[in-house]
Image (cartoon, rainbow over all chains, first blue to last red; front, side, top):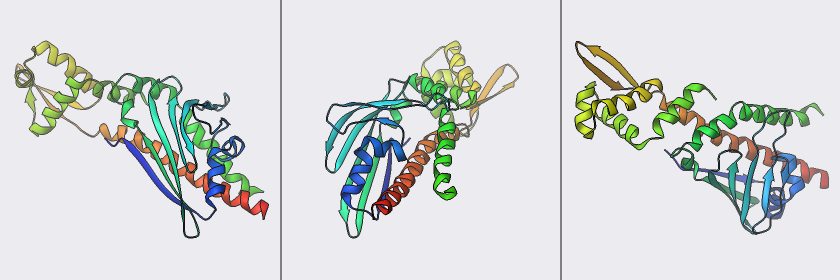
Length: 142
Length: 111
């Protein structure tokens, strides 16, 4: 099984704009997940779940936050299994290249926490995605 | 997430069961419980216990012929696990899509 999910994406925006979007608490809360977040080494962040839609809460620690590399651990509530998310930005012609890596996924598989994770995700993930869809619809409706 | 996926995870959480499953896949044909026992230097009872969990996960099919029980591997359920991993994959795709939209909106407002 693969252990790393890797994504590469180009944004037609300055590296500082992208950096702000992934490190600023307010911006993160707008497009990603409602966050208690500070891009400071050692900060214990929380991506909050909202009770009514049953999204699973995610917590972790900032491991690196030097422009333009952001690394934090990613622990899904109730699993105790640590995975790692790394955001790396690079200035390219006409914009910014983002390389996102989510590693340690296989940690879920080697022990019973995988089961706990499944249970805590039960329904939650789907609801999160429904919420995402709603968010996506907003600008269209306006 | 379905009860079915939970069972698959339970089945593959144990290294011995992963080995047994691997042996059955590699064999490419049905093996008797005795044949599996021999390969693992394990009691018939011990193997049966593992096979029961694999069977509950749908990863092993069992057939009785005379006095012997034969089993063969079915890898199809593993696709469900792959699907779950894919959902993480999809999660990031959607989030990055949102990030792109966010950047577009945010910067337009400023302009």
